[in-house]
Length: 426
Image (cartoon, rainbow, N blue to C red; front, side):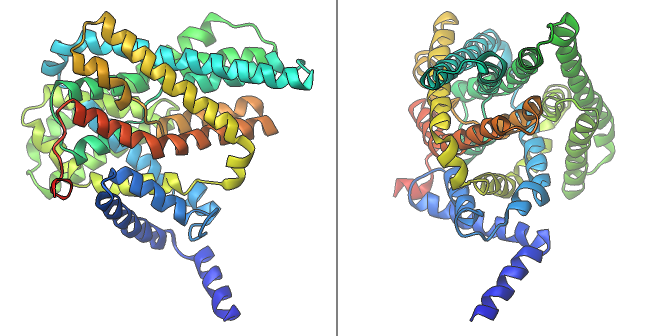
């Protein structure tokens, strides 16, 4: 028996990544079906499935596989998600809601940034007060609070989009939600760029220059938008020679991956680049509905793999060391999002359903947040504090993704734009 167990363990460590991709597809599908039976969103089922397969629980997926070998799945999923978000921003719809979306985005993103930063600053201040040592507060703890606060402004487009598609939600509330999510991530990237620059000045005792603080982030954003727009214009001229159907699927996926790859290679945002690609296609290409429906046909299994892989990052050791900090981040972000959204809807005179329920649809956080915190990790080098920052954010993301899908579904149902599944009507 021991020999069999040992051989199985060795096989799992040396099995080809395709073996695990197959397991991800099959197990995530099963997890989604179980979630449906329990009247929960499929996203939650995907996450729980990944958590069960993680190195911390059943150990079917080992750590190197989760953190290195399968990271391309995350890149592919985020590229498709960003493209779909951009494709939801039809100009004809946005003209009616544009000012409203912009106002809400500014207030809810700023609210989550400010409330989370203040909450973490107070938490670290009290922690240092108990120790009686404030020597590292301004050089380590405050910069960390600033960075985490900035990336907390992001909303996970994947979870939101997956649930919208699952419930086939359509209408002004859904359009507003998707518009805010799309602009929200762009704003979070801007906040993070500024916060990282300021944090570096505190850590390294450097002066903040206008070049680093303003021009570099803006230039990065402009390059991202140019990449997406350029690929979209080339694709617009190409698709007239491509027959509709499966051949178009290859062209569309190639364009999405090309856009993301160019952005990553140039060290700019692949999310913004693919959002721009989707935005240009939905607004300036005839018969664009077929282009996006082709991608939608393959989204569900990709969502399943993406969220199952996110759940597989669960580490009980991390949760024990950074659990309280993760809880502070989650509460601060939830509070900031809800208060900021309420303020924005009041200022923009949004409909009553938007005022009451939009904030609940903006609670998910995942891929963008994780990507930004990994990018900011280098500020603190390889110190223990950098691990605490990454682990606390990962803990809050996992906690958030288990709770927030229910809030998103709640907001869509209350707004009257969710189509109930037959299994839920029985």
